[in-house]
Length: 168
Image (cartoon, rainbow, N blue to C red):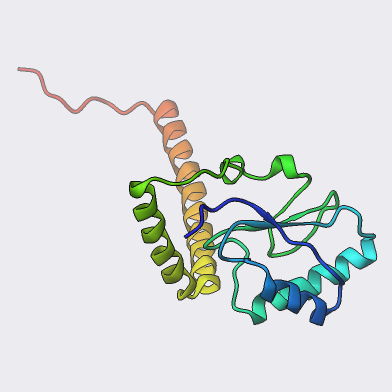
């Protein structure tokens, strides 16, 4: 397996067919990738994002797992694909210099490729939704217990309890 470093995906058009060919030819999901969309107009960008999401879903890919797929644009987007403003904002650990791995690193890369294949077989959208739901319920529970703790502390400060110990 190759060391995972960023690859730029070059788009040839904004139609679904063009994007389908690009996604099939690229290594999205096998290595971290990004697509630079800074020079697209707002209307083209919106159409492109909708078509790209559709192609990613039909190819059973996930934009975050096992390797992330980023969109570089200066505009704020509402999409399942993570977006950043520039190449400098991408995670730096995927920009390492490529060198020949030694034997131990080769063994680790082989294990990594097995893990990547296992991750691809999971139902990633379902798992991520379950994690979000669980996180929301835990956040709600935390806020309620935080409020309860505050009220109990306030109660203890206002009403001093008499000591129950007896003297001999």
